[in-house]
View 1 (cartoon, rainbow, N blue to C red):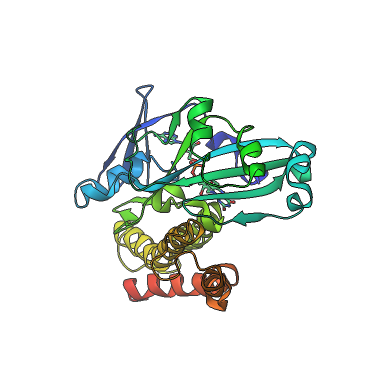
View 2 (view 1 turned 45 degrees about the horizontal axis):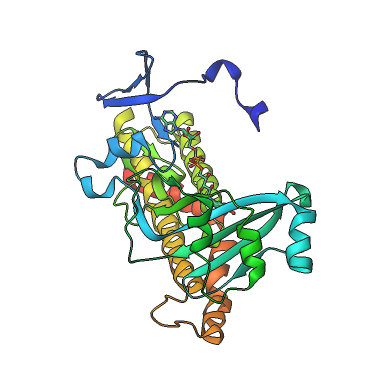
Length: 311
Ligand SMILES: Cc1cc2nc3c(=O)[nH]c(=O)nc-3n(C[C@H](O)[C@H](O)[C@H](O)COP(=O)(O)OP(=O)(O)OC[C@H]3O[C@@H](n4cnc5c(N)ncnc54)[C@H](O)[C@@H]3O)c2cc1C
């Protein structure tokens, strides 16, 4: 992928601190005091995004910060032999284990040489204590206590004992009223940070890039020259928002719903595994995520941009 990027366009060790928009450009100020300007700013700066704050803080100040989803996890990566000793053949394929306010997600990584696992806790009674920081260090004993005395299979306790005693808070951008303002636009987690329960957060970021690059190409080719550059950029980013936001926010809400199901907290299906599986195996639940027609999205985005510019 990096071979497609001209290296003289890349700069490392830069931290964006401020964004200002003018009618003809956007000006970026970095922590080293230097500035740069661009026609369009694409913010892919993750869940604690500076660009998101720039886009939303004036009109939607309550929607800037990620929302704590009353749950957290402990994570670990161990050699596959260690995992097999604990879980045997359950390590062969990716697995979600459901439970009452405790769950586990586990799968092989590193071409099968390592085993990645998340042991999750849903606890609506306690607020997140670390503010907007997504991790909190605890003691090994505190970590183990989260899963002890709950009748949990001892194999999960053995797995947990190998995790790092760090709580990873589950945060998401549950509501985002727009992905752009003027010449600045969001892609990836800055737009739609999600709970991990559909394993689809990064994939949505890739879909963003696909649609946005198609519209950028259209802009660069000047295939519709109605209006000045500001109007054209606004039409392109408006089309991006119209196509991407409903889909990415839909993914995010369903990931939160799976999070409720995995912890037996879903209002409709509770702890009834037959009903939970019925819901998850319902064709539309995952199909619309996995088998979506992205080519149609590209056509739709292009059409929306043309409509806006009356081309
Ligand atoms: C436990 C867990 C499991 C997951 N599992 C999956 C999965 O199985 N499948 C999947 O598709 N997704 C998964 N995800 C989601 C996935 O990790 C994210 O969606 C993805 O990493 C987001 O990519 P991003 O580039 O938008 O943001 P990030 O990966 O967060 O990258 C943002 C970058 O911007 C930089 N940055 C931030 N602020 C500034 C600034 N002011 N100036 C300059 N640089 C800045 C950061 O240093 C960072 O390098 C999971 C997430 C979690 C937490």
